[in-house]
Image (cartoon, rainbow, N blue to C red; front, side, top):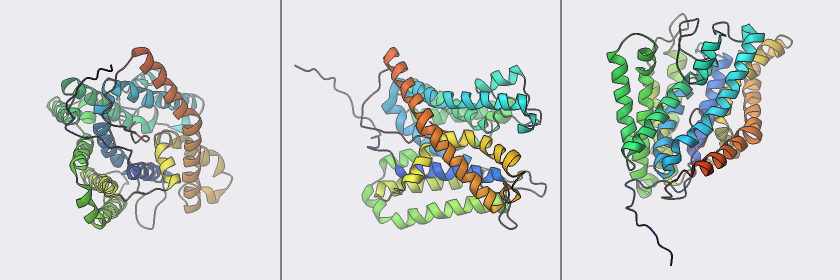
Length: 374
C-alpha cells in the first residue's frame, strides 16, 4: 500500500508552464542593452536601450516569486548553478583581456582584490568612482545575487509566501542603506532600482490570482499597455533621461513604472491565451543571460578589430550596430546551447542528487530562464 502525505494546498497556484511572453521580453531586454552599448543614435535622440536592465529586474522578481515555492530547498542551489559558472567564466575572461589589452576597460582596476570582490559579488568603486565589478555589466549580478539571498531567507521564514517576505526584506535593506549613509553599501543597496524586484513580485501575485476569462476580455488593453510601455521607456531614455554632457540626469523610477506595466501586461496576455511563439525570440530569451554577459566581448572585437578595417561597420552606424547585435546574439545562442545549458543541467544533477535537496512538487513548473535572472 502506498502511503501519501497530505499537504495543505498552496495559497498561490503556480503556473502550469513557462510563459513565452516573458521569454520574449527577456530577448527584447537583452537586445536593447546590446543596441544601447553600440552607441547608435536615432536622429537627435540619445542612444537608448539600457532600460532593458529594468525589465530584467522586474522579470526577476516575477520569476523568483513564481518558482521559489515549488523549488523549496533547491532554490538557492539552482540559482547558484545558473548564475555563477557563466559569470565567473566571463569575469576571468575579462581579467585576462584587461591584463593583455588594458584598453578593453581603462577605468577598471586589474588587481587581485578587485577580481576576488568581483567573483564574490561584492560591489566596490572602480577607478572612475562608479561601483561595478571587473566585468562592467556584472553590476546587475550584484543586485541579483542579493535578491536571491533575500528570497532564500523568505523561504526560511515562510514557505507559503517567500515572495512577500523577500519584498519586505528589500525595504529593510534599502532603509538600512539610507540610515548608514556613506560608502558603497549605502549608495549601491539604497538605490531605487531595488524596488523593481518588489514590483516583479507584485506582478506575479496579480497574475496568479487573475482570471483567464477577464484577461481575455481585456486582451487589447493589455496589448496596448505593453506596446505603450515599451515605447515610453525608449522615448524617455532617448529624449529625457540624459543631460547635455551625456550623463544620466533623470530618474529610473520612470523605467520602473514602464517595466512593471510591460511585464504585468505581458503576463496577463499569457493568461488570456495570447502568446508570442516566435522560436528565434524565445531562444534568444533563453540565451539572454549569456548574451548580456558576453556581448561586451563581441562589441569590443568589432570596435577594435573589424571597424578599423571597414569603416561602415563602426558600432555607432546603423549597419555596424545591426551586425554587432546579430553577431552578439548568435554567439550567445551557441554558447548557451553547447556550453551554458549542459553545464547548468550537469551541476544541478550532481549537486541536488548529492545533497538530496528536496523540492515541493506542487505543479509541473518550468521556469523562464535567461538574462540577468536565473
